[in-house]
Amino acid sequence: GYGGVIIKDPSADGGKGQFVVEAGSALSAEVHLGDLRMTGRVVEPMLSATGMRSYSVGVVSVGGHEVSWVGELKSVWHESSERYLFASNKMTLVRGDLDVLAQTIDDADMKVAIEKSNAVHSRYLDIGVYAYRATYDILSGVNGGRQLMGVVDPSLRPSASTPGEIVGLEHMIRNNKDGVDVELMYLRDNQDQIGLDASCEHEVFVDTSHAKIVTRVIER
Image (cartoon, rainbow, N blue to C red; front, side, top):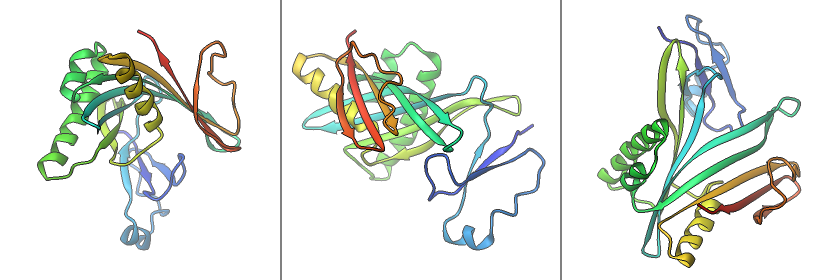
């Protein structure tokens, strides 16, 4: 059977504006008819935290270069402030489209994530929607005893992964490489030391009192 579902406010971010409806429960009174008419709601299967994996898949076309990439997202939730303190994304970038990317990845779960992203991306192209970059967030996990995976957030605009794309593409062009790994970290509230190796050279893209985005190339 089906497990619980997560009801999300599409206008909220940072893990806010959402609540859980357990399996067999009536829909919460928090969902008002007026809200549904104005903004709608996103409904996702609630995946067990045990074994859940989160991926991001992207494709970029710029200056005659096409690059595709996949990364596994990892975040740390800060209970007292009720938001994510930092997130990391180790991105594997290759020259070519998502089909080429899928052929270079050994991880079976990642391959499926790329295939599902490619199915959505191809549909966009079929209906005439084209963007110089596109990213797809994918969740994989268990709901009600069933293993599920699906695209939960397609995006056709610059995002927090953009600095990793820029650094990776520049490195491939400058060094005439067909692929590269890039680590991207998004830090909040000046948590400068979390997850960063001080011995490695990093490039800072954003540095404010509230957030910092840092990247580094990982040589293969």
